[in-house]
Length: 301
Image (cartoon, rainbow, N blue to C red; front, side, top):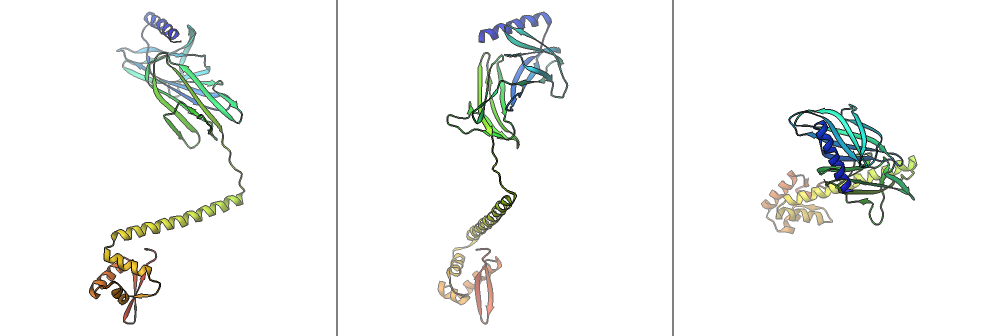
């Protein structure tokens, strides 16, 4: 195959010498928009004109003859082209003026009914090619049909390992980015299947939704309260924590003088701590006769 590519390129070089300069392909990107039948294939190439004068043509080499080929420049402008076969290689000649020292992008769009076939309860996408270019900027992108996902199977479902795997909200997209060389072969494989949606009645949906809402609300409250407790604990001194812990562990009503005796704090020291905790809304102080009843703010602790 590499010998065939070299012969084809040599033939085109002789052709160029006879008829003038043409642009060079500097990037090559393949996108397959899959269906379970006929898929859409787009090959995007960047044509670079490195010369000090404008060029009028671009040659793109393909292994097979594309079905219902259309070429545009990315602005919905349809390009004129011709095609011929050289040494068994399908050659496309695009007619367009590219100014000196500049580049343009062209999209070759056509149908491909050879990349997808059904196997039991899933589908298999296979794609192979031989490179006619030496290019650092190459990508292969496969878009699964809407409502389809990658099949989970032993031995792997995507080959080779993709560079990126993501979703645009409607389709799963698999992307490979790599470097290609003259005569290099590339093969890609993806197993995919229709995603099944379990049937749920409207009433069941409402009930499940309500349960999820309540569970989420309760969990958020628990997490929020836990977070507040952590923040409070981080801001308290050792003596302040002792007061809070004593009130928290008490199973009876506590008064300020009970805490004073229990912790053996002086009255001025405890009064200062109680005042601080009250201003921070960590405790409530309620006068009862000549005593102060101390209660924790359960929203904070």
